[in-house]
Amino acid sequence: MTPAGELRELATEIAREAGELACARRMEGVRLAATKSTLADIVTEADREVEDLIRGRLRAARPHDGFLGEESGAEPGESGITWVVDPIDGTVNYAYGLPAYNVSIAAVRGEPDPESWEALAAVVNAPALGEIFTAARDEGAWAGGLRLAVTDETPAGALLGTGFGYDPATHDGDLATVRRVMPMARDLRRMGAAALDLAYVAAGRLDGFFERGLRPWDHAAGALLIEEAGGVVSRVDVESPRPMLIAGGRDVHARLRDILASKS
Ligand code: IPD
Image (cartoon, rainbow, N blue to C red; front, side, top):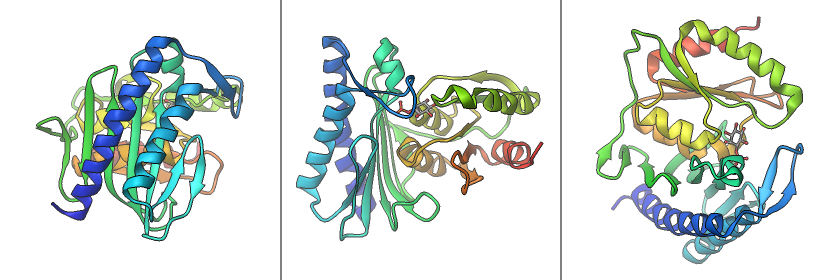
């Protein structure tokens, strides 16, 4: 097996275990642990427990790698590989009992900065939906035995996904962005779990996706899934506090980027 394939297998095994833990805790009932940037931006006790599990398993298997997690922050390593982890992406769905949440794990090479890192392996496990999406660099993206491919033709307009983040102060601006994008859309979906949105672009279930303000752990794994499924992911306004992530098949990505990179 290639080194990237080995990282994918390890991530898959850990994401499965993490997903089982998240599901089990969900059935026992969700307890809020804290709020973060705004009142709507929540952390559950399960987010922390699941991240602890993932961090512990990775440390045991690969003690020299770095770690960057949504809940417990960054720890540099010495191997040049960093694990970028969202233990429960879609926490609000999770808290409300909606099944669109996932465990997202990526292994990246280089500085743990999305502008420069090279993603090597990725897993998005949606345990309540019974689906696990995996990729390794140059080895394709997969869901079970099915190789993933982004869509390339969208004659009726593109089915697009987006998200709005949790700060009410940014909702007006995000809705104005939706208005600018709608002429190229056949419809819009807002599922509440960015890593799953990106996995769905890779699987051809969405034609494209855009969202401002995503953090590295929201898109690290999903972006590699899309690239390995033949799609394109880019970011604009990277110096702003809320960079815009744009993803899709080559054509949809280019059309989205034309709209979203231009100031209006
Ligand atoms: C959030 C989800 C949501 C997106 C937010 C993210 P979290 O991640 O991916 O869909 O709109 O921007 O922060 O907080 O549930 O891990």
